[in-house]
Image (cartoon, rainbow, N blue to C red; front, side):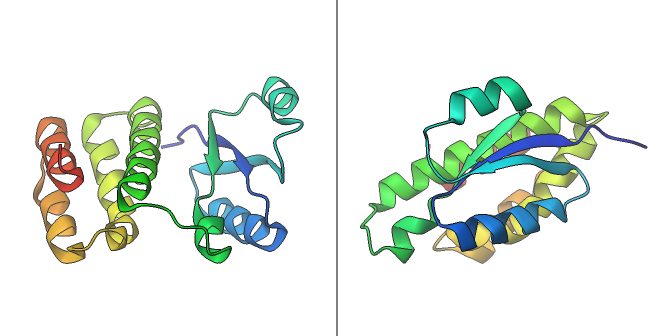
Length: 143
């Protein structure tokens, strides 16, 4: 089965981090970094030219630069990123089961962003079907 690759515009101001994230994304068989940018000056032109499916803004520089980010702010960024990934997997996968399985693989790593990592991953892993998956996600994010 050939799936559509998600075309990603990566925005990150730290060059080394940008290159590292880009290399990690390129290793994913269903993702493709179409371009990277270090600042916001040319983003609109790049979006118009490259027509990415998604844009990824890294929040990691906040930690590297010792910029404080609230727990609530981090959770909002994580939630936004999760919803973006889920939306594109449901659009490009040929059925609901495959998109849920992709998200379960995603949560293997994503769950480490949560205080109760094992509990979060277990909730996701037990979910069978879109409705149960979405309930598990809402439980983890606290809404």
